[in-house]
Amino acid sequence: MQLDDLTNNWFFGSDIDGSAVITKDSCILVNIEKQYINGKGGLVKINPRIKGKKVFEWYFHTENTSFSGWEGGVIGSSSINYHNNVFPDKNLAVVAGVDSLLYLIDTDQLDTLKGWVDGPNKTYVYPTPTLLDSYRINRSISTPLLIGNKIVACGYQGVFLFKITPQFKLQLLSHMRIGEIESTPFVWNGRIYIGSRNVYLYCLGRTNSKP
Image 1 (tube, helix red, strand yellow):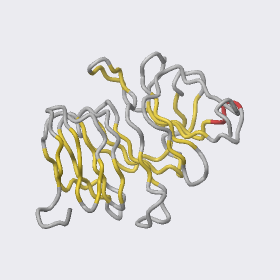
Image 2 (cartoon, rainbow, N blue to C red):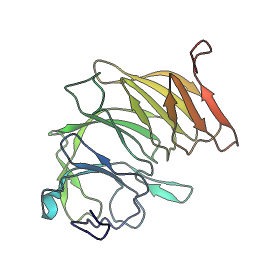
Image 3 (cartoon, one colour):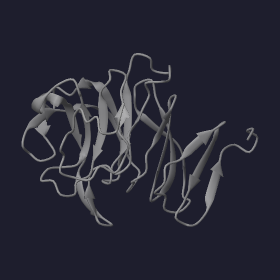
């Protein structure tokens, strides 16, 4: 494959700051910032095998807000559980919005009660996925990590550790204020490594856990 082998592209009209994520069914999860678009930013699932407006399998929007030059949407990437076996029959995505909420989404099940929502530019309407739960963690541009049934989410109020319950609810296990965090955490051998805007790199975990 050559870099000039352009097979497809999609115009959103706004910044895409995070990384695209490939799902188990060969679709793409893309985050969208609110800036420059008429509608709301959020997360979209693209099916590259489909042409036209139906290329969006669904669109999940976050609420508009004003914070540090951002107007809403999602700045970081989403995380998925497709490569762990804790919930083998449930395909999940977790994403943190600038609107202060952490969202747990079922990427396969559409929300039939909510119906269809406006797309990024309000040109078309699309189905929206089922929101399983959300939790207010304050402003965030970081990418949350989904590891097994645990979520590590960071933002301007520090780092949060959640457990996903069997009912697919977010249970807060721990919260530590270690400055304003914009970076994405890294987990290795039961410990969390995270850089903060207060000029420190932190290693978090149980004192008796092995490095």
